[in-house]
Image (tube, rainbow over all chains, first blue to last red; front, side):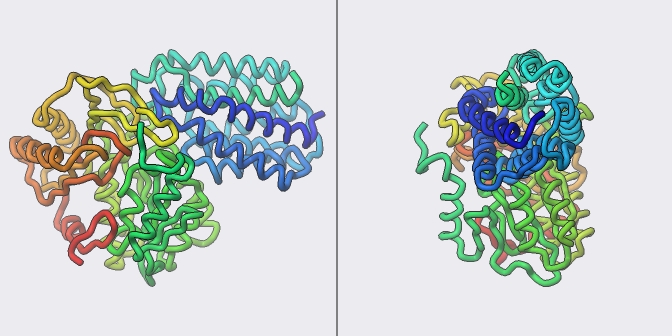
Length: 199
Length: 330
């Protein structure tokens, strides 16, 4: 079973990897976006860990809901509402339980991803974070490690796609040949889950 | 790239402190990043709130004041503000007559303003929204995020601002804002990429002998790259693209807008070419604005925006305005 400690660890290790990879995310965002994806997420996850250090809720759902609200309040751009909604809706789906099973997390995360798809209007293949998240949720039934691999492969697979959502979509065909920064950061979030589980 | 900054993390806050020092007519909340006209809320008047990424100055903070915006919320550089800022702005300017959110069509701006509208309505503030999407360089279809909002934002903010100052109700101000957007189109070109403070180097690579056609205002590349052209040739491409799409039958307002690093000498020369092409197409010009209004940091280049006006829109355009970035009739 996964307790509040596990979820706090998930947020902390994700914040660390976002810090580590911020420059790479920004570099991916330069040719097709506006070169700020790394610094924006870094600001958001720094706020998340700071808040969790001050007042960590005692339930998995509470931690994700609070983290999501922090991202919405600090990130801005499209990433703030999208990542914020992902965590908030996942947290809400987990409810008040003190511990949740891996299956319950997979189910809640699927609800979170669906909320992101509704909010952003993106579907798989649009060259967005969804292209990493959907395969990750599908693989979560096997293991956290399998979800990490699926997310990373999903992110890499955005390279030949033409963007249909977000700022890269304004480039039309010129967005082809670049890995999507949003899918790349989504893979970091999923990798954080595997790391928190020690996989 | 050398920049007149302290550190990238504080550029927005530093600029807000400077704006406050230069314009005592404005209330600038540096910590929460909200710029409000000093006399807000004005009794019986609809509040106008806009916002978006920083780096487009004077848009939007420079357009706060009598005759234009009631408040603006600047985000990080090229990043939309967060819902907390918009909610704070709406609360500061609402006199009970409601608030109009003026939103440029970028995914981040749309999502954050949508969230803010929900929160504001929970607090009993009546909210209407208008989406600005004037950029003809972007294919508008069900399968894309749609056209970007660029130069027409200035027309919407000025004309809706005058309507609100006249005491028109929220539905009417919203309808006028929509009318302005529907009658406006833009096209932009870049001669150089811009450099964001966070990255410190140009966001894309544009060789000296080439230009980008169909750019937006966030330092993203455009739709097409060509060998460098003359001012006259660029005016032909830009004006043709706008006129083809807008097909104006009435006189137009013309905005010849610099992207931040193009001198007025060049912009006025470009304006002459824009007028030559408009005359050749038989498009009558009502008013003209030339300058850096909707910028993209230090990008060199320009955009052309046309707004087809009727008598009412022209009267509202001519109405007095007193803001840091736009001022006449007062």
